[in-house]
Length: 257
Ligand SMILES: Nc1ncnc2c1ncn2[C@@H]1O[C@H](COP(=O)(O)OP(=O)(O)O)[C@@H](O)[C@H]1O
Ligand SMILES: [Mg+2]
Image (cartoon, rainbow, N blue to C red; front, side):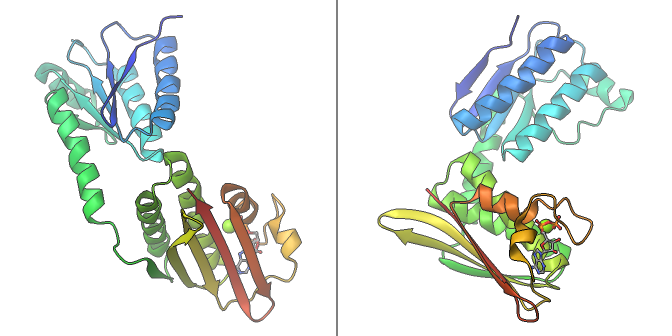
């Protein structure tokens, strides 16, 4: 089967689309890119479409799909070299390509990815302990951002970053939904020369009477999927839960480099 080559280019992956895309080629490209983003720890995907004279809704959707998957893996997608006529036609066709950034050429696209990396370094927390109150649903987003920043600072791989960020999101949501709000303490920890990120979620809510049951996949007392606690345990190297009815709940997770 034909495949579109993917080149590694600094922190980014470069794909040059030259041939007429068809379904199988597009699906293969999406799969290949997902795998390569993870194995190369790529922070960006550059898709060069300068050879394309026409971008129809099929290609548009492929670009959107790639951008969506990349975003989950914390990589930016930049489409480069779009011809002016193509850009105008896309707008009139009604394709907004919301998740996709565009740049004039590959150099500018690379510069965009580097700018983002540099910006991230600057916003990294300098303190080793941070607290975030979890009172409203926006706080869950802040918990994810803080966890990501600490995971990057420690040097966790992209996959491990994603694991602890996902776990942090689940636990912050539980603190909010079931614990009636609380806070998280996020720390960079060191042990025997290893560094890691440790998060402690604390609430003074109703507590959990049967912890074993709460940990079972599929168990929910609300409308959830019942995967938060069990999933977080699997996603981390350390997991502990202290909870009793009436006193509240404390869940601690850690992911080590
Ligand atoms: N902080 C908490 N305070 C009280 N109960 C909790 C807390 N976190 C989790 N639980 C209980 O554990 C159950 C399982 O949680 P979870 O695995 O995240 O699934 P879900 O959030 O989908 O219900 C919840 O339905 C709830 O009953
Ligand atoms: Mg949950």
